[in-house]
Image 1 (cartoon, rainbow, N blue to C red):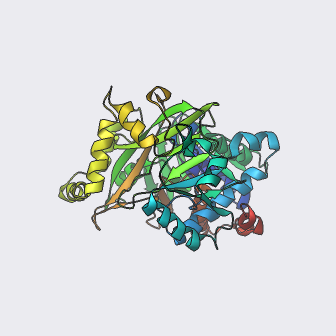
Image 2: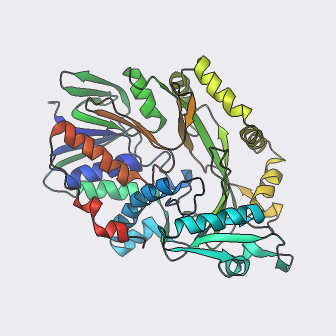
Image 3: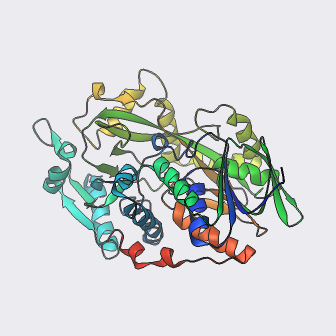
Length: 449
């Protein structure tokens, strides 16, 4: 069979790769694009609904976001809402969901922090409401009630009501692929069960060797989580980066929250604070978490990726120094040790109960059930040059017709925004047309107003 040349090949069938495939098919004049995914279906790893918090992150209740970052992330979040809202209702209702959401301040210090944050963010996030204890109880009674009355602590919440706040990223990824393949005047190939073995620049094109044969492309985008860095390293690219994979675990309780309840982030911790969410895949359950623990794997529950991790870690004095510096921070050290204790049978549920009671004070031990098979891995990058941990997503672009996207949270939320940036680089390299009007449309800016 003749090896056909694709204009662009996307490696990785998570929501980021699927969003790019959709955008290539819909908004450019490129005629031949393909997506390669090593598993038999798309969204089989971190984009799978059970492996993430199912949240549309907007920066409004994520207290570790600066205003600048929140405004930037919100634009991408609004793209998701705009895309989902335009789908037929039956499909839309399987992808995006409306729940109330809030970030809860407990105690005078956190409450004052949220009051100040509200004043700064409110002009830019007009849907925000500042709720006192009685107003919180109207929306989330179990957050306030304790022993027949109200819990004693001072409570304040920043809440957003009546908006799309939850999403099934796996269903979204599948929708992106289906929409891309519905474009009739282009070749849009989905190659499932195509594990990539190597990527090599041959002349002006890239040859991608897979277990099923060779694929040739004029431009390559690798959106494969921690494996993006592995492929980069094997090509001698991005060697200034190492990787710290962080795994998250969750617990189920009976349905005791009506919506999403986040807690104030400790700004010394590069990990998410505990939150409670309705689980869109398990009706009648509320999911609490995550716990966070470094895990030497690039994919959760895939021991084969231990070897991949050791290769991408590139452990040396610099990496060891960065990790050592993290452990020198008391809050981080205590947090890691505490999360290690969360893995110890018999004591794990009791320890987690203490944290979960910050959200629901009446929660009992028998209410908590470890959520087996729930939770993914975030491949946080370590910058060996700057000797620090990079929080959030990153990309490596040597400017040679190939990009590597490493997209931990909020990378799923920003999948369309990231696709927009990929398309700009593809346009620059290939000289194709890119109709950016949808990304800049007023409907995007109005999607959550």
